[in-house]
Image 1: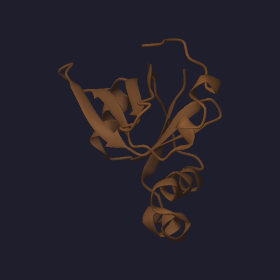
Image 2: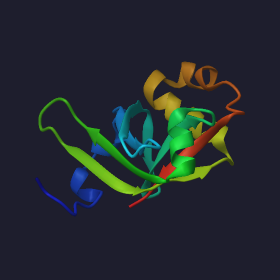
Image 3: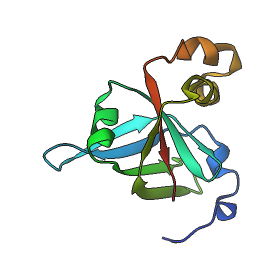
Length: 126
């Protein structure tokens, strides 16, 4: 396994709408693994989360997080990022629509998101 990869080393890998796995810490210290939609943008991952979601509550209490994005087809590229998440509550709808559109297409992305009034963006950067 290679470490210390650059974004350039990954080629178009991060452009694909692959489901990520987000690891957050429960109050007892055990790990919760959750599939999430993601986008790589401006040197970090954006994850769209409901503000009242368990993942968001975990990150509010303890911002340590790990996100893994991996292919299930050869060449089986993948990336793991261990960091501290920042929760962002501004421009959430625009980011959420961009993320949703990656997965459900332009025609459905905006409708899928709705108002995003009670959502946040978890920002994970190296």
